[in-house]
Image (cartoon, rainbow, N blue to C red; front, side, top):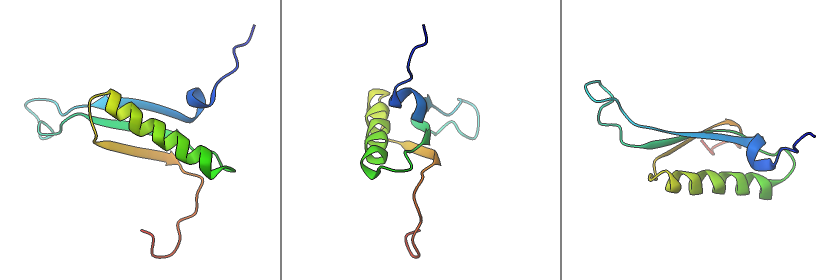
Length: 80
């Protein structure tokens, strides 16, 4: 029997990182890092996935978040 992957399993992966004591990154507090592949056809689905990233960061005990990956959206002139 093959388990059907859910949206949450296939569009984001997250970890919580912290700077290593005794290194230049020691001051880095807990930071959630997510790799995403956002839906190419639905803005509502993209927003939902990003919302789950933020909820995941809060569950990890942080509000510092880095989201990277395939955003499947266009950057408009002047938006960056």
